[in-house]
Length: 114
Length: 114
Image (cartoon, rainbow over all chains, first blue to last red; front, top):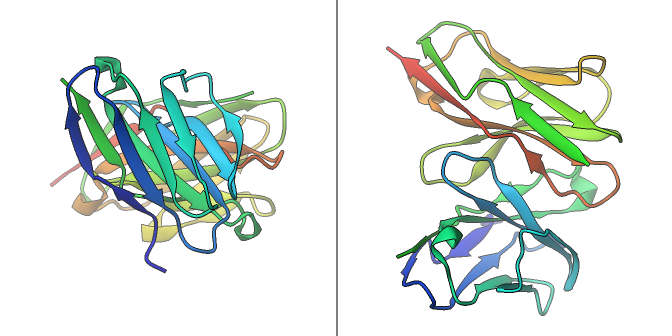
């Protein structure tokens, strides 16, 4: 059990560019969650997957955001045409619902849009 | 829908003093309650959780919290803090309707002074 990993840890991009983040959950965890955390705020829920199915999306997830979990293992979060307001820490978490809903978080990807 | 209010944005305290970080929640359904800690530039680590049963919950690093249903509160306490406890603390709830997503408060910065 190596924990939840995220790649990259830091990303600096220019406004208008596309970016993609990857999350590798704990291997036996079938649920995966994405959150966004802006400076000085608590994390906000974006979306979650049960295996490969995306079951819920927050209204925070605009049309420029898309998330996938094609084989029910790793997940990607893509932001198209980035805006300065997208600058934030993007956190991934995974759970095994049989383990009392304890979410295990990755270290996050910090995105800076210049 | 659920919401979480952390009543103090910053709590300064001297080393070896007791501390309480306050959390109130609002929900129309039964919830699970969590406290997470976040050190600079890191992901979130679970301190403790309340799922059911005893309202006094003990967690890691000497922290404990008490669930008070009538006051819809879940305050975090530690009898004697250390410099190493300096971090951001987040209270969170998740509904019991099987989504598992977390709704976070805005966070409390605990600053332990020597």
